[in-house]
View 1 (cartoon, rainbow, N blue to C red):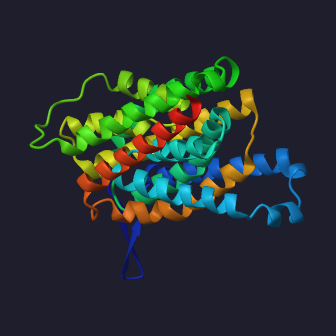
View 2: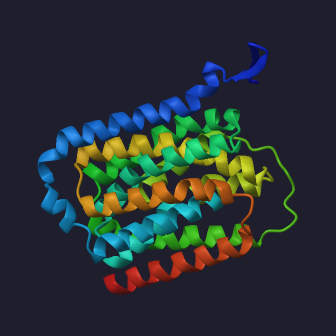
Length: 300
C-alpha cells in the first residue's frame, strides 16, 4: 500500500497507512511484552553485583559470537543459528542451553532485523505471509521435541553432522552461477521443514529457506529481507516453546547473544546490498565445518 500524502497548511505531509505501521508496531509490542515477562518472572535471579560480575571473559565471547552471527545472518539471509550454535557447541555449551539461548536471543535480534529490513525497503510482504504460519508450526514442534522428548547429549553429534550439511549447502549455493529464475512451489512445506530443523538443530531456517529461494532465482535483497522478517515469528514461537517446556538456562549466553545481535542487526540490514556474497558464504561455510568437526572430535 502506498503512503498517503496530505496537505497541512500548505506543506505536504506523508502519512504511513496503519497496515504499513503494523510491520514495526507488532515486533515492538511483542519485544516489550517479552522483556516485561522475563523481568517479572526472573528478577529474583539477578542482583546488581551478579550483573556486574557477569561481564567477564565468557560474556565477551558470547557477545562477539552474537555480533558475528547477526552480521552473517543479516547480510546473507542465513547462518545465525548455524554460526552461533557451532561456536557455542565448540565452546562446550550443552545443546539444550545452546538452542534455547540462540532462540531466545533470536527473538530480539530477528525483531530488530525485521524492523531494519522494513526501514530499508527489503521486504516482500506476500512472501512473508506464505512463510509465516508453516514456519511457526514447524518451529514449535521442533522446540517441544528438543525440550521435552529428545536427550541433548544423545543428539549433540547429530547436530554437529547436521551443521556440516548446512555448511555444505551454503558453500554449494555460493558456487552456483547463472541461476535461472523458477517458480517456487510448496512454500508451506519448505517453511515448515525449515522451522522444524531450525528449532531442533539450533539453526537451519536461513540455509534451508533462503538458499532454496535464492537457488530458484529470487531477488537476493527481497528474499533476505523477507526471510529475516518471517524468522522473527519463527524464533519467537520456538523461544516461547523452549521457555514453557524447558525453562531458561544460561543467562550469560542469552544476554551476550542478544546485545551482540541487536547492535549488529541494523548494520547488517544496511550492508545487505554492499557486501560480496560469494566469498562471505564460502568463508562462513568453511568456518561452520571446522567448528562442527571440532565438536565431533571432542565427542569421539
